[in-house]
Amino acid sequence: MAKTRSVPDVWMIAATLGILAIGVVMVYSASAVAAFHDYGDSYYYVKRQLVFAVLGLVAMFITMNVDYTFWKKWAGPALLVCFGMLVIVLIPGLGVVRGGARSWLGIGSFGIQPSEFMKLAMILFLAKLLSERQNQITHFTKGLLPPLSIIGAAFALIMIQPDLGTGTVMIGASLLAIYVAGARLAHLGGLALIGVFGLVGLIAAAPYRLQRITAFLDPWQDPLGAGYQSIQSLYAIGPGGLVGLGLGMSRQKYNYLPEPQTDFIFSILAEELGFIGGALLILLFLLLIWRGMRTAITLSDPFGSLLATGIVGIFAVQVLINIGVVIGLMPVTGVTLPLVSYGGSSLTLLLTALGILLNLSRYSR
Image (cartoon, rainbow, N blue to C red; front, top):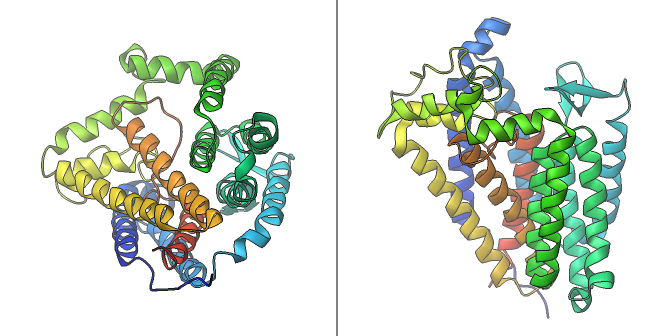
């Protein structure tokens, strides 16, 4: 049966543009002080963010108008390229170390983060694989083990960098797609139990991760060390109250909260715009996720439905972790807030993924 193409979901477009606009404003507000101190230019970070936002919007427009079945053909090659980049980034001299992780490829100040691209490539490949083997997904060795092995290999390469945050987002979105494809809860429950033991092992293997766990439980045990970011984040959110201190009036961005334009940008937003500003941003994310899941549910094509589910999963897991960390409900993991935090690779990649999701919405019932 021929597919009927309509206009893309206007609510999804509105939510995307609204979140992106808030992000650009908050990147400037959160980074102006640090940018002037480090580079003598208050607009240093926001100018770069605007460049990547424009590139991302162009990519979103293109992918929004490319039939989503195109990605089914290129899912395998895209995954192989991303695996290759994950290997290359680990080679000394080729991979660039930033923030203690060898997770960047690039020259000078320009770079890309292969693990960000792997998130989308993995979802594309899983959507293709699972849609072709839906009748086998309830069988562990034939249906579930192959995709899990691929996910595990990608996660291992990301953890060597190490980048637990990005790896966690990839696994969360991938498992959501696998569950929607029809995997048995008993199998997924057993994997979750194994995952808990694996997480304990990862924490034990790196002392700084154990420090993050103890700091999450009681940040005041080490207020100037492992608990510093969590405490300063709460110091930002608390004074914000209902309406905030006013746009640009944050106190924590004056070298109290480290990297306020990236992982903890929501703290600055809550400080300046208060509960109302934070709630508005969360509502926009919920609107985006709801419309995305509506697209996934109403698509008759299994590949398209699983692809939409995985893309929505990337956003949902990333938002949940970032805001959970900022308000003290989760340990610090280094996960950025989608479309809001400063970062070229993440912003461009996520807008590209949203373009694919918008194309999928053209074919939903």
